[in-house]
Structures are given as C-alpha cells and as structure tokens.
View 1: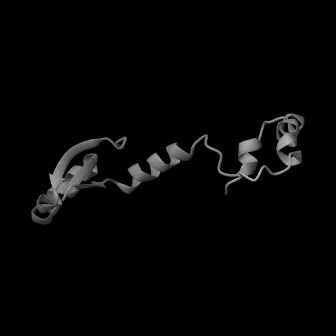
View 2: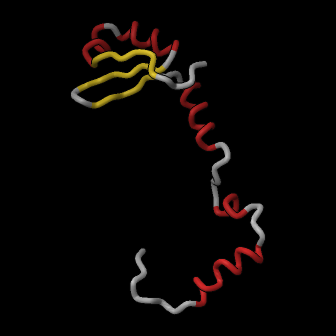
View 3: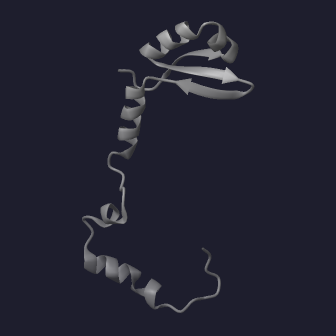
Length: 93
C-alpha cells in the first residue's frame, strides 16, 4: 500500500482522454489532477483510510481523552482562578 505521496500529475484533459491510465497509476500510488489552478488527488480508498487512521492515532477524540492521565487536583488548581475571577468585560466567544 502506498503512503499517500504523489507519484505523478495529470491535467483534467488527461483524465478525460485517458481515465484508465490515470486509474492504473492511482492503483500504484496517489495521483494529482490539475484543473484551472486547482489540484485534486486520486488515491486508493485503503490509502485514505490509513492516512485518516494515522492522523487520528494519539490525538484526543473527546474531552475525556484530553484529560485522561491528568491529576484532578492539578486540573482544579489550574482552573480555579478562571472559574473564580469576575468577568473583565473583554471576553470573546
């Protein structure tokens, strides 16, 4: 399975005229298609799945994941002033 690196680049016209060749190359690795200054990629679904799984790996997916392993007393002490301080009028959402 490829690692998502671009192996070749085609124009949109190439894709229109020789779609089979573009797909054959996409079976070997990721292909870039350029059209009017915009780039697109064609890759195997398995490659996309792997890239997404790798991107998610180790990153917190919820607040619970984010605070896992933290000392609750330390978290409380770090947020105490935030919760107890009166609004300054400069808060933004």
